[in-house]
Image 1 (cartoon, rainbow, N blue to C red):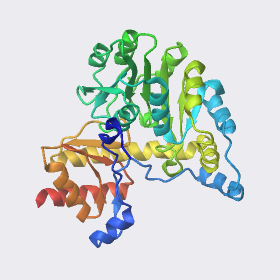
Image 2 (spheres, rainbow, N blue to C red):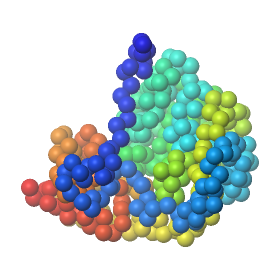
Image 3 (cartoon, one colour):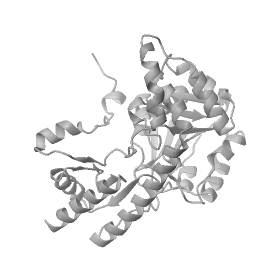
Image 4 (spheres, rainbow, N blue to C red):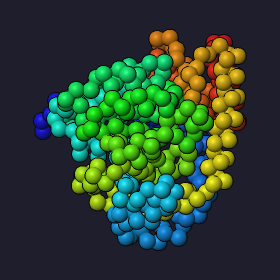
Length: 357
């Protein structure tokens, strides 16, 4: 079979090996995974409790409309259910947006480095990705606005940005949105917004309530600890979601994910504990990284981005791996998830040993 060139040239996302396999290969046990920005506390206890009764009904197709979850989100966010779209993780909604609004050759603007899925889905629909380098570790919104042309259909903004953890402020986003013409969809990916503590964080819901062409993406994978169930949601006006629903596959969100998400939304204790654990871990790692001599990017997410010289990221990744600490190498940087106190201490000790050697 002939594979089209725009598909053949996609660089596929390379997931990490299962922890058990890495341990077997390296001959180690008790490793710590700090590579994928998962919630170290695990899933919401209320979500786990909600899963059990529904297991007997796994022979039935899931609710294709996500009725109960949309109603729960509707009450929490003060939006109408028809302003919500639920997906198999927010990843699926990124892909659906590209398939819905991008014709071959049309443009989507995105930052670099940022979430790799944006460029992958744009290339998959034979669109043209316009890449704008970050400025001070966050999106250069002035440059992105200057890059808008008559062929621009989508702009992707991760706020906080993955992998750097930096945010764009209210003032920056307000100025940017004034420059975006009607008919250009601004996709604001807020996978980590629940972790943000900065008072300068932009309120994307304001632009939505103003009737702008915006799609706000959020997920249950991070603070709610449901990454393994793959569930996220989007907020947009119905005229945007109508088209996306035509592209969305039927029964795209499984039943256990829907039930767990509804329960997790109400688990305020788990939510609060997740925020506190992250803030305490962040302060500890800031202090210890500074003592070791690493510079880092201040984060508003649940991970820390550590810039390095060329070649050091791979060496450091392999050195930590031998100590049973799994992180994410990213070219000229590493990204480490903020874990539990004992996991953070394990990371610090492994970094100290790697530096000494």
